[in-house]
Length: 219
Ligand code: ADP
Ligand code: ADP
Picture: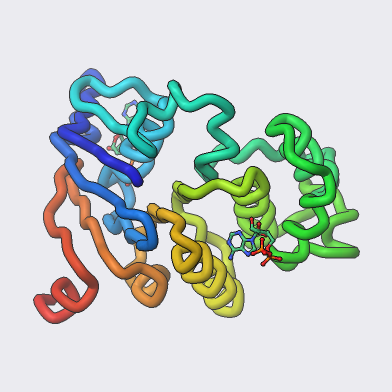
């Protein structure tokens, strides 16, 4: 469960996010849609405690993200600056995430397989990865702690159509297990098949919100 209330972020001359309120319920995938610069990343960074809000609050599973003990075991996060060192292989990267989170190392290979980076790909250095491969690895890093909440910023970026289909299956499956998913995109077509609800942001403000059927029939 993610609850965002009146989140606001002002920088010197810009209001990046203005009074944003929405809720993401367990078992649902919420698509956070808006053009570049709309305020999606800033909102997600505030939810994850990485950017302090000017006003408002956000909780994940009832508490502010920063008050969750070992948050990676509860909330899987993929933001643009994923913790991926280009000199490490995919497997080393994920093994390190597993170690930091205190996760059984046996999960590393299972997660690599789940995201389609098994074998050869996992033995290559991340520096040689395509953006799509980095996204897959980032999703594996987000999932390895077996979280019940996923917060993914533009995860479809760099994925080919097959990758987008794969991600859709994975996230639908995650939600079907009772998980809560918030994922952003600037392209409706990337998320329309995966999300059951949309929150649309433009110029830092929520401009539309609702079930897929409602929004698509109105536009
Ligand atoms: P999105 O993720 O939807 O592309 P962002 O949240 O990255 O949008 O940005 C929203 C607005 O806030 C943009 O106008 C952006 O330039 C501005 N912004 C984001 N971060 C900063 C910052 N650190 N300092 C100043 N302005 C920022
Ligand atoms: P089980 O569901 O019995 O745990 P699986 O082999 O299906 O067994 O999954 C093993 C682990 O992999 C799960 O605990 C879960 O954390 C993770 N997993 C599998 N599929 C998904 C998925 N679509 N989304 C997130 N995590 C997954």
